[in-house]
Length: 353
Image (cartoon, rainbow, N blue to C red; front, side):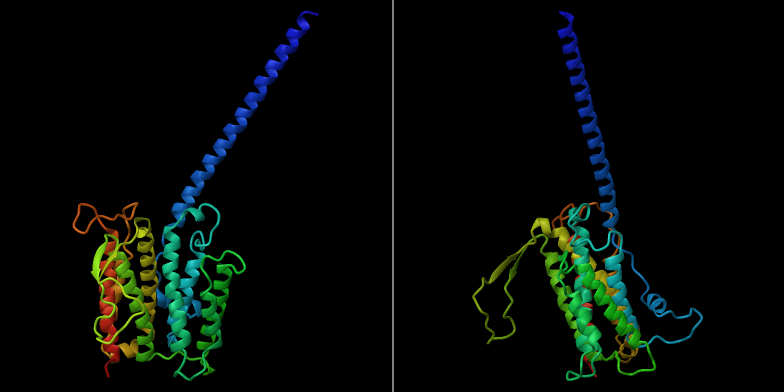
């Protein structure tokens, strides 16, 4: 009778230790699972953050149109530019990790460099789609716009952060279907209702948009170290006015948290413009030769190729202008500024008779 309570107490203590050991095992397994998930997610994040490689615009066009490698058939005017726009958007959607900007789950939600790269690419794709609808596919301002290009442009302009209703990826894929429809009709030599007009004025229309984009990116990149700039908003016109008064001196500085965002947006924009210019070089070959402007275009391409050089630093550094540390934003701004200056010269050449 006396030993029974001691036996019961010993059983209770034993069960308590077993329950505690079981709880510790569960927590240990949970900890291992969390660590494993974080390691895998980090590895995927690093892999997904690698920017896609470049591609040959001519070869991609021939493959898309199923040209025989032994064939001497000539590519239809405009097919390379259209195919390159399609390839740029497909790369945006099909690269490792897919389209990351609107991700709501790890590791995509942790990443910011690649989404900014995607935004830079997307802006250039939208600009080209707009130029194709408004200029390249129309013979004059009063002509009818192409219905497929109009539908494609509207879908490419869907908010890139939209996750559902509508999903950005779904809308962009619909836009690609309409671009493909236009390319198929354009490549059909048996019908003449679908056109791409490779004229100097059409090319200048698109280049003007690229010029403003590159100019803005150059200013934002240069502001990584902060600058005091004179306000030149009304310069050159004595009668010019603006809505409200502003200071004669403006302090411009990119917030330190946004420096890498601007850098990768510029890198993505340069990547897209680079491929589109290579397509333009083929589709507008006769125009460029007649204006003696091919070498100017090639110089722009060379400057933009330099923006795609590998980045060996794990971080985008923001050293002072002549300090000890590198400033990646100023290096990028240098290449983009030179490309923009050459672009202005090219537009001038195209405007000449």
